[in-house]
Image 1 (cartoon, rainbow, N blue to C red):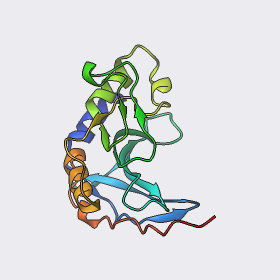
Image 2: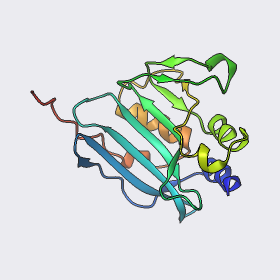
Image 3: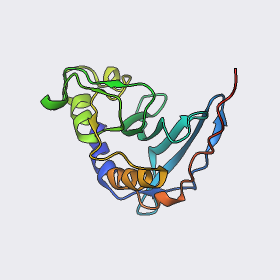
Length: 175
């Protein structure tokens, strides 16, 4: 079952439908199935999410995959742009990034996290219930949503990311 994932992530993907942001509580999000060679891939999708009240920050894109026997898709690669809260790596993954704390934009790369998911000696079902534990900083922080989308499209190997509109952020609510 996990051996199906690397070719899916490596393949050039397109959207099965146009991503559209939806508001729920204090967030905007979308989830769109992904196609490879015009065929929608079962269990593979792109999710975007952000806080409604934090314009130009706290925006996440991730590819999710629903493993056989699970009830919902889990992230397999993610980009966090200008997060509000830091990400703390555990003492695993590339030595130079172990225990690092990221306050800036970063990526949870597929290969490092996949290797951990399938090779750490724990049952797969336990590993995929956890968040992606390994992050590395981006080479440069994208200066806007368009630059982030271009970077995400390249990192995730997705064509047509220009079809994703910027989130419809709102002015912060007054208390």
